Length: 170
Image (tube, rainbow, N blue to C red; front, side, top):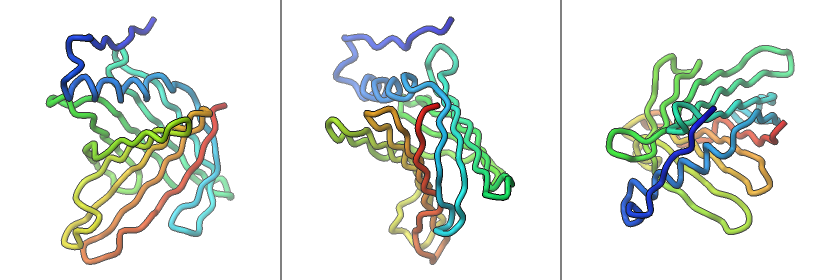
């Protein structure tokens, strides 16, 4: 039996309170999602995301897999979203494209009333051509759907979309 994340009213004016409220938006969306996507602007694939709360709802685990039309796995990720030791929402992902654990800092949350919540996690600025930079955008739609978008740019290269995936809960 899982426990719910406790958010105390006395914490309302803190950044930690705000971050915990954002985390609850993820933990409340547990389930398996399936959809179609595009990788590198040309490769069509089927994507699946299994999202579920972990460790007393203090985080969410996201397992992502993309399979091309020939049935080959083109990408796989194991991701955790939780508050870090500074109470900032953070995304850590181990994926088959980079073979190392990457940390994406919380950059922004935007609520579009009666439509969706948009979360952006990333490292380095998309405008900074001197460094590798990446962003993951997760959209939690009010109708229960989920979108997952991955952007990256190499040093001295353009900042481009490399994965666009829209999913519905099974």
